[in-house]
Image (cartoon, rainbow over all chains, first blue to last red; front, side, top):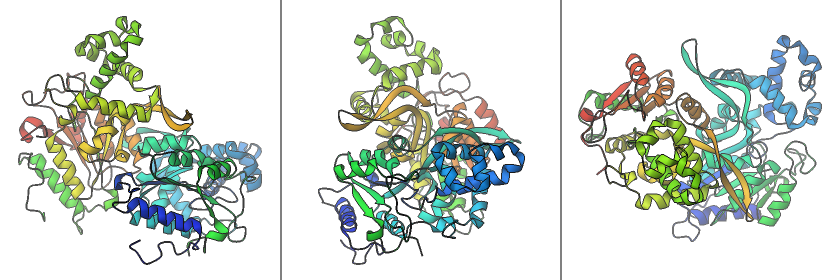
Length: 308
Length: 308
């Protein structure tokens, strides 16, 4: 390495840190057998629980819940129908128990039927005051400092990070460019159908209350091909929803790195894997062990969790 | 302008050239009222007849026709069914008369049912020997030299060019990165549905013979929002299929430039507009005049057409 300063100061000097640095060095040193051209240096990141927390439920769900509460006056029927009834009671556990189906119903009711510009404004307004119920932090402070350092380190080595997340594409695009320094065009997530329309004489993109695609599991490699057009050299995830992205990445020719963040720290964050309804890590763990992925043990590999 | 060399040497010193240079200068000079941050400097380009020729029919159709001819032995029924019968006779006029419907049938029969990797290889192989029937040039030489200079000029000023084309996304991604210096992740076009699959034990992206979306007309602003997430500052097109992209661009706040390439040169290229079945320019011309778009008159504004 040319640099003498530690590019990942919030990481303990463990095996996984060494393997990451070795991989980046080998793939970016001219003349190395594993050298990769700058144009091909693609690194894809899941967002929920890979770059920021997702407990006790996906953080975007709090935005959906707050919107549903604000709209409840016009929807008296929500008091007695799920997932709205649990939402209005603030019962996150009951909501979690309804799985992705319940969450998607909340999202459809709260994220559609407005222009993209109005939606962006709603997210911006919400972020100004919203705080996480357990930590009391603003949501955008619940991003992992070690991953921010990794993003910087990759960019310094001409890797181009993309977010390939199950989270809402336009929800992330409001705050992620500033928080992660990843531009909107490199952020892909679950997408609603939209229409180009002239509204009050002005062109607008209108969001429908209808899914285009849920960007999870076997959809992630498809999204990567559609949006990027190249197989990633490195891919980072944390759950079974990332399995196909990490498999697709690792199966490419030449050097490839797939990495799982294992949530093992019940003091500083949350500890969970195969028994969690949100961000379950079960099959990915098995497959990853067999296929030579790297694993971050948050408790033992990271000095700090959140950005200071 | 700081530079004393002409950034667009293949353009005559006409009004449209001056307006382009003035626009780029104003939006990139720090302290200017019209200054635009680098992250927002998005410029979108149609491809067919904006960056390369599309006559006598979209050039990608020749690829589809050649593939259909090669597959004809296994499809005896094609001899008597359209658009295959006209294709096997090499009757481009009869094929053109069937419009986009006929073309899409050809594309479905010739572009699907294979992995993305196999499709890329088929395009690469075809480009090695294929020549345009009228000009005798390799297809990738039929790109416009003035537009190559414009792409370079925009990049020098930190504008990021994207292709937003009705052409096939994976077809363009094979050759456009080298020809235009636009990376695959900035190339969007008409897209087939695909699936992530394990084939013979190896992960693959399988192309289906089913459309995801045709990237034309009012779909273009939607694609721009989905893939880029920002409204373009500049947009370039040539036909009615680009109208909504140019409207959406021009309607944004602050400085915006929308430009139409008008094909007026029947000697060096082709001259056509409202009566052409391929690349019709009719409503876009009207709307553009009203909304203050720029127009390139190919015959009088361009010193050369194709790259030397």
